[in-house]
Image (cartoon, helix red, strand yellow):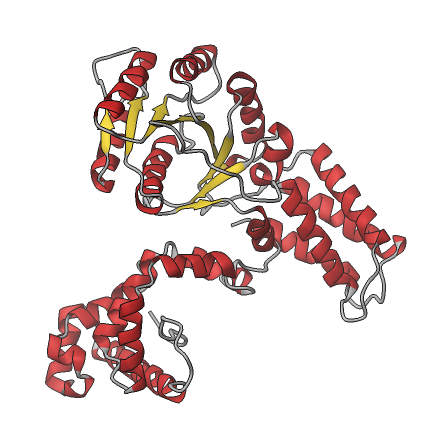
Length: 442
């Protein structure tokens, strides 16, 4: 996420390395490089200039503390300005009403239908709502089918009229359906085009007028940069939407949309999304995103994701087993599966300070632990519970069953034993709920 921008900003701060104080002379090149980094990220020139002018003004007027270097001071100033540029604080999301109506708008290919499924998942699982998704895209042939599949996958109801060619009527009928079935949130997936056209804009505006939505969310592909901002302005002029959703943040995101859109349309970014899984939707926190852009990671979000998968009773049982040196392969398999539920592994690792740069060229995905899982799943329950049972003949069977050779299996068992020893050395310390994974190979 924003790897190129992060690297260029880090390079810009190096101009102040070794300096004892900030002044007009040594800050000039830093400001120039920051502005160039923003322009390369497809941020509008006017925004980039105004941003760097503010940074320069604050940097020149600030006093550098003895314990803080000029470079560190500049990072803090840029962090504060990035946070303000993206909205300062997380925006409220209004789901009051009976039912609350959420209208989804955006260009074709921005990820509206996938986001509709993700938002329904978020509202169902995290807010305790009973959502109804509405297939109001009457033009894209696969749109209704896609939303139907997603609705079945996440266990929510869908309203659709495949033979009706009036999106406004579909939306109005869906509201009545929601009231009849006691659904307290209606999410309307509208049609998009490859480019803005009058027919599309008129239709979505007519839907808005007909259903009086609680929230209107503009979905934007974060990889499109400044073009996304221009599109957002056109939609906002017609819809006066209430918030923005950034999708595809796991791709080669330049950063222009995230950094420019709030400034341009004066509407907050409310959600951010990555990947195709239905549970990969997050509230947008401007301060956390600024930290990630500057390579500081995002420990707060990482802890929150862990807590969502955290079972307190299970953790207590696990802690007892670790303290008694009884941690086994089954425990390890369960912990692996919990971690995978937290989201994309590379994205999670990028939340750890300093890790983003280290793994930027490393291919890490949620299939990374398949080999380990296959080896454990090829063991009998008795073997998982008691690693000492693994005789040469049993290892041969396990290796064959998992598609691994004996050397890979032995290496994994050795690493597992090393991890257990590390846990034994720390068994007097309070456990955090997740065993140490350090040193484990795929």
